[in-house]
Image: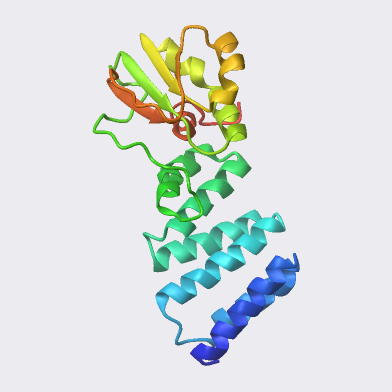
Length: 209
């Protein structure tokens, strides 16, 4: 199979995946990997990622993880492979395996939340910072999910300032009366350390228990 044929096969496989014919897509991607020996590392990694996502959709977790790992072996700094592996491990409850890959979300174009521009260090549970700024990322549902862990930071600091979607302010004022709330477009000063909402879990959740 030459390069042009492999590229067309890749499109065919993606089309099958889009139609939720995941087994058909896996067969096509496997054919590419078996027969297209001249593929570049970038192209081969993309085929592994596509096949891994199909296995993931079919709940074949181990097959999916192997494909994402194969993509990472070819391209260790591929954001999609690393971030998708994180999501796969999170879904399985394998938190200690997932968290090391979590920051790759900032480098993948599929993750469009803006990152805070600051020189302040990221907060950890062993931090001595007294004033912590927690800032929102992702959609409103994800914010609610991660905010369920905010009390952990409150116990370890003197002041918490939270940037969140203003639509959540009424419930946040009732749930966290001691937290200073700021809207997502405000400028914030006066904090010693900061942490994005999606990173709180890495500090506190290491098992399903």
